[in-house]
Image (cartoon, rainbow, N blue to C red; front, top):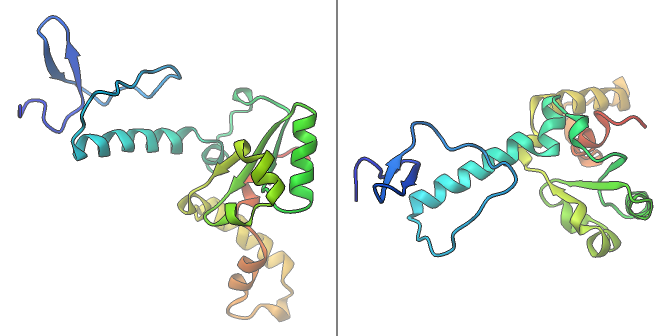
Length: 183
């Protein structure tokens, strides 16, 4: 173990044939990268690599861009259908989008894949984007969810648990589908 490199991001110096610590974190993946399969990782190194990818996923994922309000439409292949993979309309709209060569994204929160229609699981699973609960609990989603709940529940029905009841009816992932949709 070398204390100069242990627990740090490093690069291999071909000239000196030694590992050297990076001055800063490595750049985010640009889209083309290699993984060397024979490398043995410590649990600490594996955790660091997984953290880098999780940060990349959170930063660049479509759902994250929508929630943060920073959706870059120019980075998307349009037209695109944003849906939820439920029985009925979701699976039919998904099928129609695919038949029309449109892009399709089915947002799925925790436990939603089990609720996705059989057709969506069989023919549209490549379009599933799994969204972490922490993102669905983001303040922007919560604020929209509360506003929708208040508009759908009459004043006389607003008991202390009305938000819980609304939560049983509405899916927070719907926010992802409608926030930037044109139609």
